[in-house]
Image (cartoon, rainbow, N blue to C red):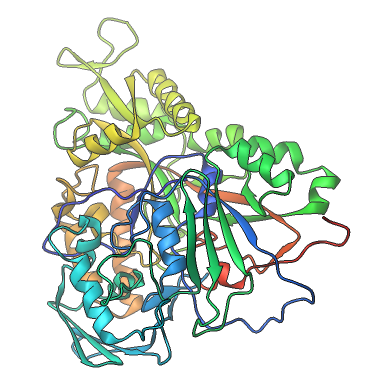
Amino acid sequence: MSRQARTPRRPAAVAPAAARLAALAVVAGLALFPLSGCADRPTEAPAAGPSLPVRFPLPADPVTLDAARATDTTSFAIARLIGDSLVAFDARLEPVPRVARAWTWSEDHRALTFSLRPGVRWHDGRAVSARDVVHTWRVLTAPDAPPDKAVAFNLVESVEAPSPETVVVRYRTPFAPALGAWTHPLLPAHLPAREPPVGCGPWIFERWDPGERVVLRANPDYYGGAPRAPQLLLEVLRDYQTRFAALEAGRIDAAPLLPDTWRAVRDEPAFRTRFDVREFRQLYFFYVAWRMDGSNPWFADARVRRAMTLAIDRAGYLEKVAPGFGRPAVTSIHPDHWCFDGSLAPLPYDPKAAAALLAEAGFRDADGDGVLERGGVPFSFRLTISQSSKENERIAAFIQDHLRRVGVAVELEPLEWAVFQERLRGDRFEAVMLGRGLDPDPDPYDLWHSSQAAGGVNYAGLKDGEVDRWIEAARETFDRDERARLYRLLQARLHELQPDTFFFYPVSRLAVSRELSGLETSPLGVLAFWPGPFAWERRAAAGSR
């Protein structure tokens, strides 16, 4: 699945650092991505015998190998394997030291000081220093930088290097989610051109065969020790069936399982002998945003938005089409976020309650044609979707059918991905169906703050003073319990207002060859956390060729 970033507007305050708008795809495809980090070698000793290259599928070719320009998921994932960052997240979504061995905040939480670990080197042998951190910040905030890079640093006043091992970042206001911005791979100050890329991470770029594969080799001089696998062969396999066929043929070592595929193989002894199946929940949610800016006259009314959610049998869809591959969502705060409010339940499927709310809002079927109207205007709208997968079309048709049953006429508007992005950037839609990958830090500024309602990723166009105040207060609060309290208030408000119909949180299944050890999963996916591929090791099974 691609997680190509949407280009947000540059507000006065920063959106979460690592957030990426996820392109719509089959739920199982989420298994492959988000972030990637690296750290000191795990203590588990490798088995005897030679370690073999690990073959892992990519859902798309990278757009660029320049970490400063990478906004699509594939490019960014590769950049994080080649590069290294000051901070990464572990499988439990907690920040861990990388190139920065430690960090401290000033008493007023406006200055963040990083202490760099010694012995970190670029792949060309040059030492990594604080100067490279300053350079990275300047490149990512330059006028020609991709906007989603720059917004991560908009609250930064300055980045200083008082010594080669020390970096001081000064903020205009206290900013609790700040560490997320520093998960971006560092850029070498001595190399203005970065293709082919030179990083300081555990993997060295070897070659890129466009449309086929990207080959990385283990960095023997990595400060945490060399990765266990001598090579990563990242194979471009765009189709899920193609990936599964490659897995069964022994050409790759892991592949996501679609619901239909999982049902077909889960009871096969031969399959379970060769492959281990990992199940994990992704830090992601799938939703429909109801645009409130007048694009459609009905969605400014919270009763109407609530009726939309009540009319769609989200749990029924998951049970029928993808059993075990998701759970109905409550809000944009994820169950794996530390501030998730477990006391809130997803709105149920209740078409009678939906019809009652629509009647309360003044809608009637005056002419008996099955379509509600108010003031002589039929309740109809266009639902914009991406043509990125058949699953999108299936979900959209399901929504269309359920809303038709309560008298709402939905015209589906499937668009090619580039056109879909343009519509999003220009806020030119009435309602839009999409998915979003979430950051380990739950800061929802870009999703719900009023400043992001035009040109940002607040696609519903929500403008609510209380929501703004809670988000702003939480960003300046370093006490996690107090932040959680503010986010619980936010979740209750979103549950009440239903700016989106929060469809589901996906659960992924990944089939992994039993020749491959060290592969862990997390809400951040597979490539997305420490230790990630750094700990992977493949050794041929007895009797294999």
